Length: 362
Ligand code: NAI
Ligand code: MG
Image 1 (cartoon, rainbow, N blue to C red):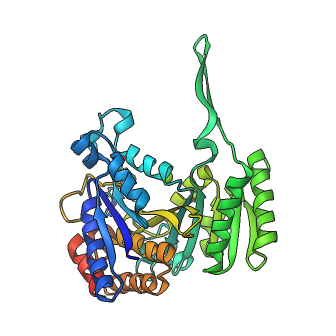
Image 2 (image 1 turned 90 degrees about the vertical axis):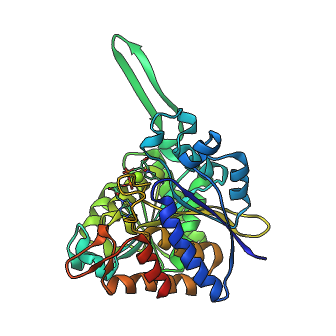
Image 3 (image 1 turned 135 degrees about the vertical axis):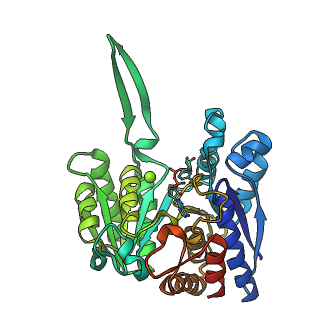
């Protein structure tokens, strides 16, 4: 059966970056790996067309696709649209309806960019770690979640961190499975010293590791100490698994180890389908719609193209093609071809289209 992709370019630099993905897909098709693609609207573009951040019809296309590639949404044009139909609501609905509970954020430092890191070259050169963040539970979603008026000018803000066994088991399994395809090491991060959810997290991850993944090495770290280690010596990690809140923070910290926002891909995975075994999945760059540079051909398309590489690896088990694509990116950087955001002395500055051409040519 044909591999069906839904492309959701979105707003700002989203469509510019997605255009470069098309070039890589053309190369894959010529090499005998065709994808059937369909393009739909999300975010401000969808709001302009039909008053919703993603329409039911386009949502159905996402549910039906083997994988979704997402650009970025949002921008000043839509700052005052109603809350329920703001551009971000499109991404939130995709995550919710597709039940994407595992967010994968690699932090890879290409040797050619090691000097752009916020750390010393030797600490990050060749860095390759993967943060697996739980995406649908924890304190962002637990109830009660409210602001209570206590009178006399006093209020109480309440957020509730809740995790159940099954939520921890399934994210732990994703992390262990991924570690098996990498360096066989998982570090679980929580705060069991002060949080009950941390105690449960630690207990469940330990049990899953002991019962199902004896071949994978499992370490535990308190999340605050983990943040420190991530900056002190990031290369000690392989796969880090953590909850929604800590994962949000730790993955942003890890991002800064690698240089530009324009380089960072991500994946969000759901549960395997009972019949096909395939997981629903959405792949997107970490960056947003970058309205400050949109429409000028300045955007770095590598985050988007690297998201496509993640798709090849995780949705289609096309490891060989994924690695070839990542090697092409590394080679182009090594050759000194740079967009403005990663420009360095002695390098050649190119625009979005030229960067896409260079990667596709490699
Ligand atoms: P942003 O990621 O769009 O931009 C931050 C800075 O990084 C800007 O200076 C931008 O020019 C630069 N940048 C980002 N991606 C780049 C690339 N590929 N190449 C070169 N430079 C790049 O974040 P910002 O400015 O906070 O948000 C802008 C809009 O994007 C807002 O409407 C925000 O809500 C939305 N947003 C959407 C996300 C998504 O669709 N997943 C994620 C983050 C923000
Ligand atoms: Mg964040």
